[in-house]
Length: 252
Ligand code: 3PY
Ligand code: MG
Image (tube, rainbow, N blue to C red):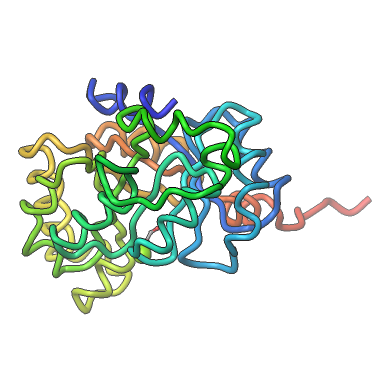
């Protein structure tokens, strides 16, 4: 599955996933069966705790999607918890430097490829399948770096050249906030910054992606047309909010 997603990215195709914040395995099952390549469980924003992760990941897997985790912070500890629970990869918030990313890529791979700790966890079937430790290449989880601070732009070429990086994912909210332009997505400086990030990613042959938050097939198509490849389509709370309003009914 990880290799299928990597194959799509390598061929220039889009890999479309979705996103969840509501810590409930039924939500995970619904999203896992909805046809996405992956479902990212968000531990950065919202109230998700790591205790629920194994159940959410199992439920996502039932429908054939790969479970990913947006970790709470770009730290080795948070990556280890998510991967031990069985995440197929991590989405790392607030990557600002190549050195920071290099450390985290290493924290996500078992030795000799990296420095990830070896212990009993769901990732090795609670100690039943230690072959997974030996097959470092196949077990290398997806690593996606979020570019969402203007500081990252200064070291972007370094970030894009870190071995083991599968894609970058732009966070428009934090990026605009770091530029003093919070939510001003039509501001020319903001648009130029996004265009610059995408152009540099393409030059470095690193797939770039974004979150299409509004559940609109037209916006998803536009994102694919714009060359984004690692795309999150909406999220549980937004799907619900957009369809939950009591309809206006005609009087009898
Ligand atoms: C941001 O826009 O900052 C995000 O993290 C989007 O998921
Ligand atoms: Mg963010």
